[in-house]
Image (cartoon, rainbow, N blue to C red; front, side):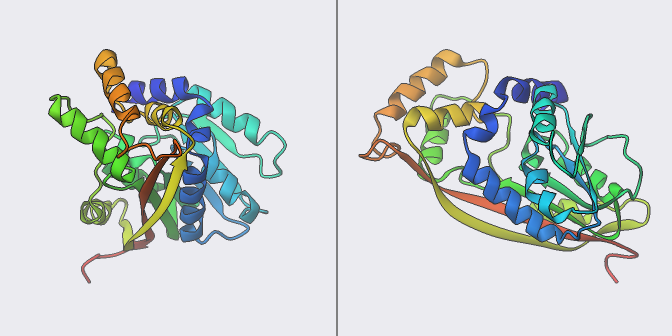
Length: 272
C-alpha cells in the first residue's frame, strides 16, 4: 500500500482498529516483546506503532529505558499519546514513514514491527530500517498474521472474492515464512546484518460475538477490497447466512495463525 493509503486507512479506523481484535493484538504484542528479550535500560523503537499496543506490552520492562513509536497515522499517534499520558516511561511518538525515518543509526537496543509488514509496499525496507537502528547485539522482531487468513471464514471470503473476479485486498493476506527469512538475510547495512533468524508459528482460536463484529474488524484492518462497496455488501449478506461462517450461537470463530520473526543484529560475513 502507498503511504498515503496506509495513513488514510488507520486515520479512519481510529480506536476501532485495536478494539475490534483486542485479544489477537495483545497476544501478538506480548509474544513479540518476549522475543525481544528487553532489559530495564533498553532503548526500544516500535516501527508502525499505531496506538501503542506494542509499547504498552514493553512498558513494564523499560523501567530505566526509553521508547519511541513511529507511525504514519496522525489519529493513531494521538491515541497513543493519550494512552501514555500518565506513563512513567513517557514514550516519544513521531509521525514519519517507518521505513525511512529520521532516527539516528544504532540508536536502539531493540526494534519491533507489530503486524505492520503486510501493509508495507516494500517490507524488506522496513527490516533494513530495523537493522540500521539497532545496535550490535540488539534484537529485531516482527509479527505477521498468517495464511489462510482467520481460518475457515476468511478462506470462504477469499473464495467468494475469487469467484467474482475481484483482486484480493491490497494488504497481502498470504505469508511465506521462507520468503521472510530470505528478506531478513538480505538486510545487510553498514556492515551489520540480521543473524540467527528464527520463524515461529502460533495458532489460537479467537471469536467475534456476531458476524457484524467480525466484518467490521475486516474493514478496520483494511482486509476488504476498496472501491467495490456494492459487491462487498452483497458478499457480506451472503456470508451472514452461511453456517460455514457463522456458528449456531451466532459467533464467528477463527483459528488465527501468527508468525513471529526474530533475529539478532550481528556483523561480518553471514556465510562464515
